[in-house]
Structure formats: structure tokens, C-alpha cells
Amino acid sequence: MDIRFFRTHSKLVEFIWPPLISEEILRALIKVQYYLEKEYGEGIKEIRKGYHTLSLRLQEDISEQDCQDLIEEFKRIPAEPQDEDAAKTWTIPVLYGGEFGKDLDQLAKIHKLKAEDVVQMHSENVYTLHFYGFLPGFMYLGGLNPHLYTKRKERPERLIPKGTVAIGGQQTGIYPQESPGGWYAIGSCPIPLFDIQKNPPVFARVGDLIRFKPIDLDTYRQIKEQVQQGNYKLKND
Amino acid sequence: MIKIPSYIHFTKPGLMTSIQDLGRFNLAQFGIPYSGAMDRYSLAQVNFLLQNKKGASVLEMANLGPEMVFERPTRIVFAGAEAEIIWNKKKNIKNGQILEIEEEDVIKIKNFKKGQWLYMGIQGGFETEEVAGSKSWYPNITPRDKIIKNDSICYLSEEERFYPSVEPKAKVRSDWYGNHQIHVYPGPEWHLLPHLLQNRILKKSFTISDLINRMAYQLKEEIANDLPQILTAPVYPGTVQLTPGGNLIILMRDAQVTGGYPRILQVDNFSLNVLSQKRAGDKIKFSIL
Image (cartoon, rainbow over all chains, first blue to last red; front, side, top):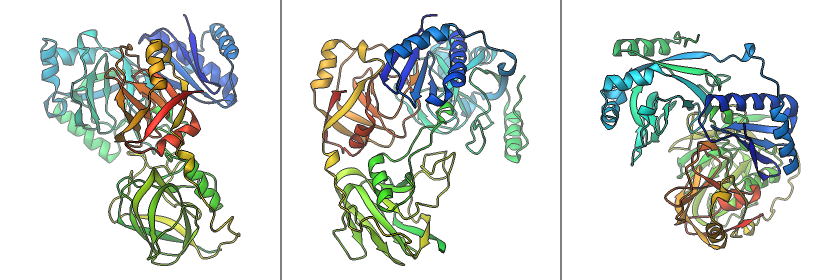
């Protein structure tokens, strides 16, 4: 795979894969990130990911030649040991529509679909967690059914409630906290996704898989109650 | 040495008053911004003058400033923006002057004459919650994100000062941020801009709009462009984004960790302090390093 680099200055550089939202590229990014952390960890302050970009803030200076050489090194990294870092699949309960997903009908109308079809299309796919960004604990997920790609609203909403499951552009996501936003709210997730008091503050790791499971209002309320009592446990398989 | 937990009570909260230190690093992987003082140079100055630890937490203020009452003795000092600071009945308090605070002393911050952010350092820093390695306030990370009316913040009162002060009347200058030259590096999408637009951006003088906060400063002038949208990619404090609508948005300390607009420039670390002190209506010019 073709890898380029861009060196903003001697301590900030990014490596760039072809501009696609793809699982293959994500796996390549993760492999390179592990390699860099293992081999050059002390020279690196921080590694950040985008869909096809790995950005490095460095402790030590890096030259153009170093960047070139690194790309050659990346190509020689052996295939990753699978077992310990195997991706988990998390099932996230979602109450679709109603007051919690107030834009579901509108979104269905845009695509000339029934609300049930949108729910089915949204919950039958398995999504890949590419990285966290936008808000603390906000997951950038790849894998939305192209039929559901929806241009963001012209005017962003002033307040999207915490837990809202939404669609915007080619993406779907869950708001870990309330925030303004231009995405279409299609449902709500009763479990908290981010807790700064926990280490790590999120449950899923980059590269993990996410599945949405439709639930009814009663189940939604039950889960909320369990969460409040502190005995809800998110499952993965 | 006896240290007594004491409080500063805010009779007026001010508009954007918060506790900041150097920021919260290594959590960007979970989408958590760095945060930290908008002007790190002034933070360093107040902590140096008080012989605090380098990254001790300070009070960050903007126009409108707060009014506060101190419970017990301590020492404070100001740097950054030039504001009218009133200590009990004393006016004309200068930045850099170490104030020996007594019980029930009142500090009022009035008019900002120059600069955007004012810093108040306190001996030993503030005793507010440390979350994930930092005391910098940020919504949903720390319990509070700005001072509200009748709020209180804790510090440790020490009667004695067990070291001689560096200089009780050090002069802290503020001409360093008068410079309107902002040093930048080309960003990852700079080369997608036609030469003509690159030249315009480097020759033009830009005005800071009134859309300024801890997350970003937006510039007034628009640059019509047809840059392609990019897939969400990493951004940092100092990243200059160009939107399809032609707006230039300079990300500041509370910037989100990734963004979807082309990243045309990256502001140099020191220039980011200079930029942070610019106010709505001020002019800046980009110059490539």
C-alpha cells in the first residue's frame, strides 16, 4: 500500500495512507502504531489517528530522510501476532425513534424508506471503531450502509442529548455527552460511553467492532435503572 | 510550616474565568483535548515570580473579569493581559507586582486595556481537583468548567514565605504580544491550494473576529476556495483550518483532537501565545517559517 508522509516541522510529522475509510487501512495503521511504540517509543510524545493518517508528535527531531526511511521500515513489519490484540465485538442497545430519535422519520423520508427499514439497515451492519475524536469518548465508526449516507443538517441543533445515536455524512456515532451537532438523531443508547474516572475512560479499543441492538422502551428503562444501580455490564463476544 | 486550606469566594464570576495549568496530555487517543492556559508564557511568568512549580495551576480570566474575596493570607501576582486591577482600595496594580494578601482582601478585575487573557498566580497553586494528570478545567472532564456566581476555589494559606521573593516589584512587560506577525508552518493540505491563494493568505492582513473562545479563534476575512473535503484527520492547538465557506479557523488549547476541514497552516508554539492574546478587531499576518 502506498504510504506518503508530511513533515509540518521537525517534531510533527504524519504518515498518510490512501484516503479511504477502510478496515484494511485501519489494520495497517494499528500495525505501524504498535511497531513505532515498540521500537521508537521514547522518541515519541504522542500518536494520533485519523481514518488514513497517523500523526506523530516527537520528543526528538526527525528529518525528511528519516521519514522516508521509516516508510521503508513500515513495509517490512512482519504480520502482527493476532491473539492478544484480537478485536472484540461490543453490542450496544439502542432505543430507535420516538422522542429519543426524533429525526428517524425525517431521515427515512429523505431516503424514501420506512423507519423500520432504517432501523434494520442501521442495526444489521457491524461497525469498526477507527479512532476517538470530536468529543471525549466519541467513536468514529466505519461501516455505515451507503443507503443511509445523509448530508448533515444545514443548521446544527443547539443541543443533542447525551446518548443520542445519530447519522451524519457517511458516519454514524453516539454522543457521549450533550453537544451541539448537525447529525440526524435516530435513537438513544441507555448506557454511558465515557467515564473519565475509569482507566481507560472508554470500553472499546480502536479496531474493535460495534453492533447496535434495537430495544424497546421497557428494556431501555430497565437498563437505565441497572446503570444507575451500577450493575449493568456491557457485553462483548 | 502550617498550611491552612482556605477559599477564594467569587462575588462576581466574570465571563470566562477558569483554573488552568499546562494541560492534560496523552489522552488524545480517547478524544480528550489538551486544554491548559491559553497563554502559556504568562502562566510561566506568574509561577516563576512566586517560585511555584513550573506547571502550577493559575486562574485564567478574560473580559469581563471577576471580583473575589480571600479568606486568609497568601501571595498572588498577575501577568498576561493588561487590566484594571483593584486591590481593596488600591488602584494601579501592575502585572508582575507580588501582592501580600491579608484576610478578607478583595480583588476586582475591571476593564481590559490590552490583551485577551489575564492570569493570576497564587503561592503553591490552587487546590482544585486533578483529573487525569491536570487541573485544567474542561466540560465533562473536570467537575467544573468555569467559575459561576458564589463559587469558591481552594488554596493553601501560608503565613510565612520561607524564601526571599525573586523581586517583589518585577516588571512584567506586555509588548511581546503586540507583534502582529504570526509564525506558521505549512500544514498537510497547504499544497492543495493554488499558488495565487497561498500568496494571498501570506500577503493579506487578517482581522480577529468576535468568534473567539478557548476552542478556536475565527478570522473575519474569507478566502473563497474549492479545496476538497478531507477525511477526518488529526488536528492540534495551532492548526489553521480553511472551511468550504472560506472561513479561517485557528484551533486553540481546547481544540478537539481530530477535524474534517483542510489543515492549511500550523501556528508555531510561541506564536500561539501571541495569538491567544489578540482580541476581536486586532490584525494579524501569517509568515512562513
